[in-house]
Image 1 (cartoon, rainbow, N blue to C red):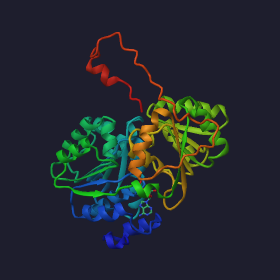
Image 2 (image 1 turned 90 degrees about the horizontal axis):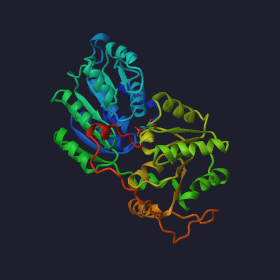
Image 3 (image 1 turned 45 degrees about the horizontal axis):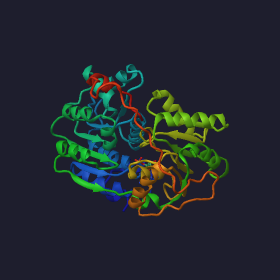
Image 4 (image 1 turned 120 degrees about the vertical axis):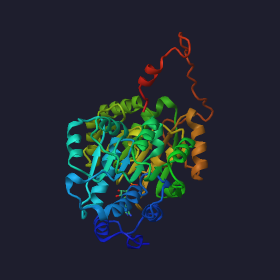
Length: 411
Ligand code: AMP
């Protein structure tokens, strides 16, 4: 199938061709016609499948006939809600690329940065708004955003949005838009709470599934290292010294873990950057930019911070900590080996993570090869180290709701 077959008009086809896309990806092939038919859809697809264009292209097509309103008279007709700032910025960038030969205007708003310039952008008039939930509600409360004309609402990375605690915000945003609208929900995974959300806000949705499991692993060489937990840092340094070269993304489970590894790598003379939720927007953007333009070749991140970010030409992914959700493993290793390129994924597994390997292997239906030839082997009989809970001297339920809400997130 070609993009022409998808009934997109010339200015959009021209921009797509200039972006270097020869033919639609699977998710685009399935999603674009449904969106053009004004259907609600629920698509399970991860980043890297081309899902942004799968909603951006048909939205531009649907709005194309009304592109020529004077700037100030433009109203927000399509809105994309995204969980993270980086992702919002990336989505808006894609919209702008695909809309190069139209008069449709896109803007992006997100938290963690000054609100004033965003107010000016909104005042100038736009057709498509990409936003993170908090800042969107904030600006709406100040009466600076009019959602009365929204015809298409996209909820991107819905599972992550719910994981990050945005469920009430998302529901509120949906209610602020007109009842009559087309809603498109995208999610990498479909846990029960996403299904529940979909049932409550979508109308007779069409389901589109693009399962990444086997295909994601196809171009990726996977290796597993069993190693005692306290030796992981040394093994990681050993691998960087002898085995793993090029641009490398390292995943750790917690922000603390990311910082610790980052310090260690800097101490050893490596050029590394880090991404996690405790860093300011500027710091995150700079870290990403430095990695993308090769100023540093190692990026260490938590899953949430790295989710959805389009980083091309990765040579390797290191799972310093293994994820307890098997799909996360697939998402992580899918970062390398994209677009026909070959990549490698290295996983460090300590005794307490062995059960994760089991479920990961079940999901991908592949036995990950184990590398035994390294200086820090794990005794096969080693038992997971058990952390005994010290037990609080305070009674359970001591904390008020307010203080619980203030609790810092671990990602
Ligand atoms: P996404 O899943 O939306 O994050 O897209 C992943 C990457 O694939 C982005 O760099 C897109 O520019 C690229 N892409 C999207 N659609 C296509 C296509 N049909 N052909 C080639 N590359 C594409």
